[in-house]
Image 1 (cartoon, rainbow, N blue to C red):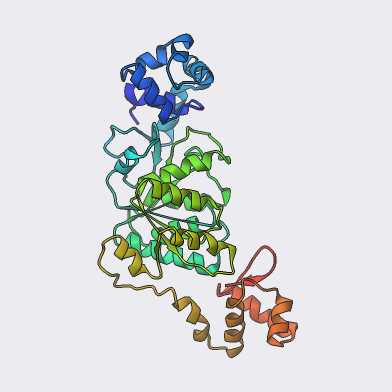
Image 2: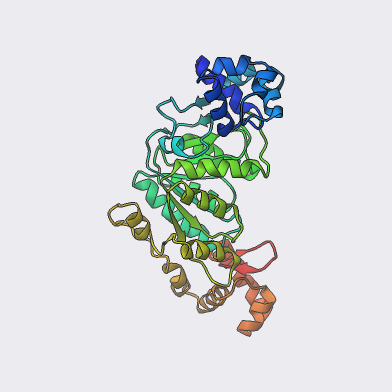
Length: 371
């Protein structure tokens, strides 16, 4: 990729720790929009800029010590990555209007950015089978209709949303906003998903090459995720989950926030219930999403209530009984399930294994079953 001088200047400032868009605004006012003056200024001059801490002034004055511009440019070329600034046509337009827009963005993949119909789908890293199904189905339907599904490539709901969008076969199906450098796949389990997104969408990151994910990088990522989209849908979140932070950011940016209600006895339902009480739109079907997006009703309606009737479709009456009881619980151990159904454990276990293989039920890390 060819990088002009203005992009190079943005890239330098973007890479320096503690130099964000708020600091950049102070610098641009002081130096009259002249990036060259910023990057060539002395430490003492930079310290005199209102709103610029001394440690930031030191990093800018000695930026070559902290950042190798030529190596970064070389990686852009070898890894086929684009570096976008606000002046570029494919910089997401809504992102320009948040309080602290990114100085620059790294983008990779066959998808296009710019003025697209973006919608974010976010949620817990530890979802139920129901939550995963809802995320996949909604993302699939939206991508079929030309929407670009945006999420954070985390495990759980994020992964399901990306997978659902990719299943549409659309060429611009999804955008993954990373909390790491664009060349750092996190979590590692999502390496296959990362490669699929490159073929049908875009990987996006604010961070320089090689930047590892950490607890501070995800809130920074979340503001980009919220800022890109006009709409956000939350599917399963605890009260203090990262999805709640992202949803509140979206609300602060004037975006519409939607939430799928969950079970009142599960922690992963509490976040969505709180959002609905705060004014988020309750979503109980794909048509509710389309109504919020001012779109015509879907011709392929996904009824969330159908998940509760799936047990009735099982031909084996014992399997129907097992699934119905598991669904009535938050989760349940095999022994407790055997007691509840008055069924010998030796008879129950083969049924559980078959249902798990067919992905009707799921065994969590505690060894309990849920669906």
